[in-house]
Length: 273
Length: 325
Image 1 (cartoon, each protein chain N blue to C red):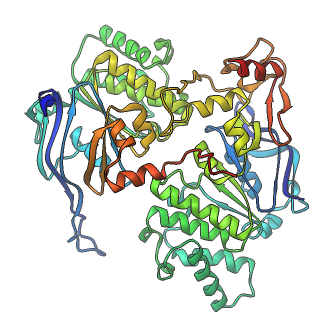
Image 2 (cartoon, rainbow over the protein chains, first blue to last red; image 1 turned 45 degrees about the vertical axis):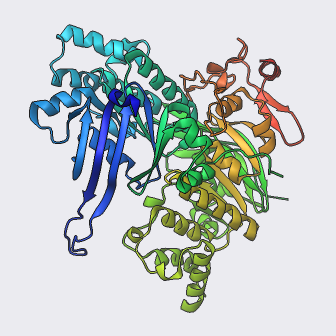
């Protein structure tokens, strides 16, 4: 591939196996292969969609990329540098460059921390700026994610916000360090359609403003079509198809992709009585 | 003759800040064998309606006004004993979270049998077993799984088991409250087809509650769109989805992503949620409506007939303005 040098993240031969613990009922002999030989490159500045059904390994891949878990085999490259078994300072540095937005905004925010404390934490951990600068940065980030005016939200707590606002706070926390790469794991599956579409718009705006790269994990092919430049379809730990969004939707090759497209609910008024 | 008719029903929750009107003056009816869908975003009162029809409202909720007429009985003044008689037998519910709706320490078959035995105490063990097998065949779970525990079932199978439980006594009315929300698209497709097939085969009435308009479009014949505790548009599926009239319905439909929708998706600017405790006297949607006038937040809207079955809860100006725009 000609554009290979622009890959920000590359996965090479990634295998992730889980070994169930021995217990009274099972001997723990059967390993579970969550990801089976994944080779994938994500280009700088694109929104890359990872689509699959529950249990297909899509969340595992997201967790590997933000280093919440280590692969059993294979290497992950960030800007062509291997980052597979980082520890200590190097891992700390990696975390300032790769961030994650979690699925459920009702669980991913700590109810004891105010909005400002939640967003300040990454800045404190990475020792960025003075107290005054941090405060300004937090207010600025809140306004970037559409919580206007930022000062009004500064001292609030998660329970005072709606689901959509919480997810905006979660996005603010992820982008406050201005990471290069953000993994968004089904960020809108808990939200209503009218709220979800506003968040998609926000993500595209952030991508433009900060030139961030996104991995968008979803089971909703229509959302991936709206948001992503390229899509990978994952099925039982294998990537079955990778292509541009238009090709995947308009000209699917793999039978599994075809099936996914076929089962998307929609209004088909042609064959209604 | 409608099997269920609800007239001017209002339900409130007593909260620390005052009475929260979760359902505000709604009326609808459903005929034998028809399917009616409720769509709306979270907090609009869909589930409260479902729980009312099952007699499962929490203690701090009360029916403020209106009546519910089900098979010529008024459900509003039912005692708990009377509810126990019809719950499961005449009205049954398919609950949202199949993962949590089954008791993990009992075998699935036993849990389904419980409903059968409660309402048919005279049944012998064999009759109950026959009925169980029939139900399992209906929802397409292999018979040998009857004596398995819930943790041995997959998500889709648990949802099927919940459907079997709801069907146990062949109820006249089934209420399905977001039955596929926790499932992925492939299983969702199977379950929706299953529900539709069984509903038509047994000629039951179905009330289907969901926040996903496409899911409702797939299952239901008639649609009620809800916003802030009120029904704001109702009609047949075709009427509501092909020629929506209320500004909120239009917003909801235009923000829905589908595979054939092109770039013409409108991003709604809906930041405010209406206060249901201290509601304004006018239209609840007026704070987010893009074709409101100054009158909208003062004067309550009224029902406007668009066709015999299609109605919108708006003002004349609102409808005409959206038509032009």
